[in-house]
Image 1 (cartoon, rainbow over the protein chains, first blue to last red):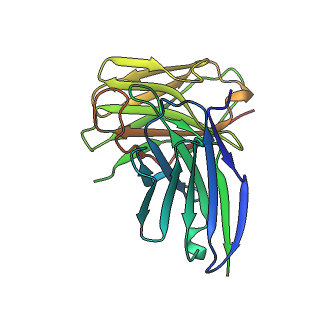
Image 2: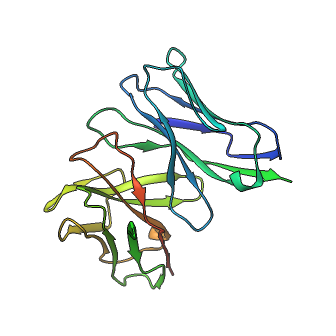
Amino acid sequence: QQQVKQSPQSLIVQKGGISIINCAYENTAFDYFPWYQQFPGKGPALLIAIRPDVSEKKEGRFTISFNKSAKQFSLHIMDSQPGDSATYFCAAMEAGTALIFGKGTTLSVSS
Amino acid sequence: NAGVTQTPKFQVLKTGQSMTLQCAQDMNHNSMYWYRQDPGMGLRLIYYSASEGTTDKGEVPNGYNVSRLNKREFSLRLESAAPSQTSVYFCASSEGLGYSYNEQFFGPGTRLTVL
């Protein structure tokens, strides 16, 4: 059973556009939702994270939107740039258990 | 600081061969992890170590063994490699004891091919 469902699998966005990646989960005990960014040939790195006590968190051009009732959260990348081209993983965890990753979204930003 | 380092970067094995993937971190982290990454499968936890001398199985531990040699080093061993173990392996570390909300820092990965 896939605990964190991520979509789309791949995404192509024009430079300056908005990239949106969605994740859904079933386990209502999840209480930490990070996003990791991975460039080709590199390891993933934490991009931004949110706890369920807030509905939105923004860091620069990156925003997490969180909908607790729908059990969904999403990453929005505003003014997408070619340098944002990477694979993005959502993840979720509940206290005391392992972080569960989504399957990833490959983002390509065309110039 | 080098962060998390992994050796080797690339490895080709024949079925049945054994090898050990090495990982070290210089951030004084307690927790260390081994993941495998396969196309379309995301990152799956193989083993976790909360501290020196302790290890826990993750989602996909079969065919692997680990050793937390000291606080810095966490190795992953394949005793008898199989083609299904062809993957990219990542080591990670984080502060805190036990699974926590702390950021995980990843190494650059080892790309392993088993023929």
